[in-house]
Length: 235
Picture 1 (cartoon, rainbow, N blue to C red):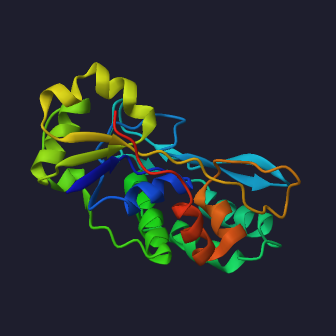
Picture 2 (picture 1 turned 30 degrees about the vertical axis):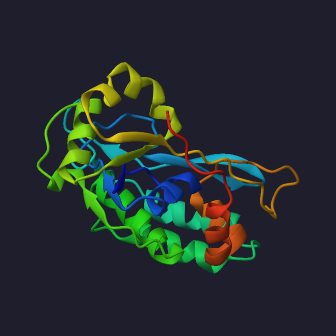
Picture 3 (picture 1 turned 180 degrees about the vertical axis):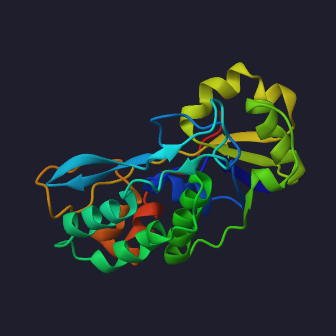
């Protein structure tokens, strides 16, 4: 069985969903430590033909707080602003309806933690993309450890024989001795997204949020986009 483990990020890029779709079980690392100014709370979309950051304001009780404890800051009117900006910026895109369906969870004020908000958005996108991979939260699996040791323990807890990792984790997995300390085989998820039509810009802007892909291609087109890349590689 192949497993992938990722921290839940805000409106993630297409590669995040490709990773989920290509494993037998996916784990949200929802109790990872929050990193200020990271993908945990922000992502890029097109505004006026240029990449623009959308950032979720948060309230922390203390340093080192985990994602499932960090509260979104609803003292600010960020939900309405994000929804309005996305709706206006993508108003002339051909699949505006798909975008609005994907971002609907932003309006749900019951999603009070950063982890809950991000996971709700990812789950809504998985539904639209037809991704049926079983998914769990690390916080519910009762597995201890730090960094690579925890990743290996989560894999073993789920009975994984292979672990599919984003390429960006290659160095720290090697430094921590992942392959030396577990029998789980290590593979890397390679995804070089091809350009697609972006109505609001003459020059393609890559690695934007899934919101841009959906507004430009729709649900079916996004599925085809996720499938258009080379297979995964071993270390």
